[in-house]
Structure formats: C-alpha cells, structure tokens
Image (tube, rainbow over all chains, first blue to last red):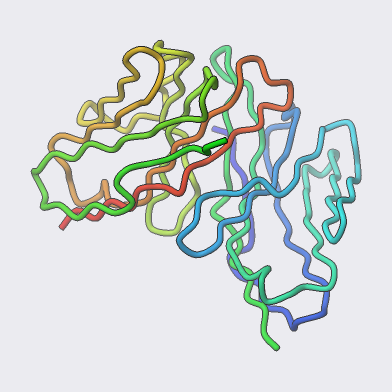
Length: 113
Length: 115
C-alpha cells in the first residue's frame, strides 16, 4: 500500500529555523498536507501544496515539494516555543473511487530556549 | 461555526467490553472519516461515509468494529468486544462534498485505553 515516512523527532533552539522532512510513495498524489497536533488538541491543518507546485510560502511557513524524489519539507522560520507540537505529513491518495489521506507517524518538534 | 466534535475525549474499558465513540461533523459536511493512531505510529484511515452511505471501509481492522451514520449527520464507531490492541486515539474528520482540495477538518480525538 501507499506509505508516508517522517523522522520522529526534531529539537531546535528558539529563534532558529526548523525543517521537517517527509517522503511519500504515491506518485499520483494530487495534494500534500501538513497538520499540527498540540498536546490535548486535534489535528490542525497548517498548510497544503498542490502537486504541480514546488514551493508555497505562508508567513513563517515554507513548503517545498520535490515531486521527482517524492519528498516534502516544512520549514518554520523563527521557531517559537508555541511551535512545539507533533507535525504530520499526509498525502491525498485516490483509491477505490474516492480520496483518502495517508499519514506519516508524525515528527515531534521540541523548541528549547 | 462549531468544528468537529468527538465524545468522549477519553475512555478506559476492560478487554471484552463494548465502547461507542461518537463524532459530530461540521454542519453541512457530507464526507465523514474515521482514523486511528495506535502506539505513536502513523494515523491510519478506517472508513469514509458520504452522507449515510459507507463509501470506503477498507481500513476497518475486523468485524469487531461497526460504524454507522444514521441520517447522514453524526456518526458512531462501536468496538465490540474490545481487545488490548484496539487502544489508541480515534480521530474523526469531515469535509465538504466534492471539495477540490479535499481539506479534512479533524476533531480532538477519543483516546481509548483497553486494559
């Protein structure tokens, strides 16, 4: 089946940039997403990118997509303690006539002073 | 506008018991999804409703799991009888019909602990 892989843990200093990486296997994925889960909360959609784009910027967030290598990254500029959370990468896969999301295991981002 | 709400937030039951999880999607969203995250692993798709119809239940683990969405509004996911490996966080999500970007909005999840 289709798969999404992420590194499990990232630690950064406050004010530095964070880069969270993800690889996926479905070359026909139309959209790729980044979700954020803070402690005790649900999944919050952070940003998404359409597969025909290679970059999308939204304030402190930059998404890079390398479709050839099936590699997605999320860069957070000027990382703050409030950015500490689990970040999930997800790809939209068309299967059985309908779309569904395939998630990675999540990257836990720890921001320290 | 209210988001996706799930009840209960946490459930602790013994092996062999029955548990029912509930999800209220965003009003007007035809698509409703159930997902599960077990032991800090990936979030896995369980099934997808369009209104009251099950469109894709390829992710349901076995016949101990039963999902319903009577009337096309809220949905329930029943586990009967529960086993230890059913422990995890169950997420519900909803999206609009034929949404081009298929943006799914998630609830806070129900943490199920089977002892």
